[in-house]
Image (tube, rainbow, N blue to C red; front, side, top):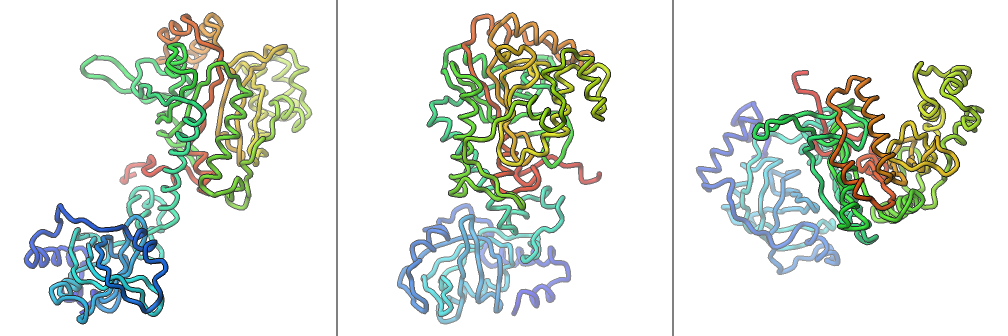
Length: 498
């Protein structure tokens, strides 16, 4: 009896059919969800061990494997089962399989998880196969799987039910396996460079280290407001003050209560590292070594395909100061402009709409975003940012309006941000107080001065380079993913009712 005929005989509702089969299995074998089952090898290990087995050859080797049923043919005589490592064909026939095992075939549906013990052979067609001697039901699936050739076609459903997406989409499965390798690669690389991994608080009483709206919560016992961190920067710098290590890093989850897009998720992963007695030039070289290492570890080459482009992650990357890039793109020489008023006038004359209170640096950064950012396809470092928008970086010698900061761009996206870190405690306090005033003027009433951080800087922080990498965006580039939601297992979504 085929699976289709069995279901028709039992019911017209697929889920109810499976529940009825579950009841039949319980009557027949008892425990349908056993706690103990031990396989002797994974499907990939099986394929590797018998890679040289010739067609139409049967061994005497008995193995035990397990996996989810992905296809069933000839009333279950042939089944493909998959574990996380790969698939294997199961053959159940009266000449090789006991009647008790064959009696279960009509109660096995696609999506069920089974264990199989049997003899290894390769068919005449070259398919590695196990002649079943024993079949064990390990998990009865109560819901039908998506149609195997198309998988989960609804994009929102893919994100909401990621288990189905990975179950039926080999591209998604590979991408998340690669994500894991990339995150591990960050750790291996940084540790090989002498960095020490540390952990800093996700719940903070004072949020800082970036400009973003936080998620706010309340601690019942302490009776105080707390915030999910928007960045780990200020805590990581305190570890430099402590002397715990001259090189520290954290792969961290950050939370920003802002918009959602193909490149933004409210919860995202960053890598931040700080290197005492280094500067932003050292951090540029570090980025290039890191990107080369990660591209090679995933693809075996530094040339990576993204969409219709080939991105080269081989260093050194192109380096261009922001004022030079804007001058080349628009003809506006910001270094020749002396005042905020002149900067706004020059921007307006060139056709840009700027706010009436924008500073020289804000005008420069805005025009860069409008005219230059979109042209930075190959990995590039943009240097010499305005001090107006970079409160934690050291000034460029001889040009106090600019700071030793760079952002790394690829595919017109910012993927990295680094400074020669400010360690003058008085200047740091002045800039943070100015930043606080601006935040309050924008209506950010929860924003506070981080006195504990400033107290630590008063103790003395060594000169250092600091770097942040957007891990999710870099993974998008390395795995050819068009949306950040394709590389986050469970991205933020609207409620189903919405």
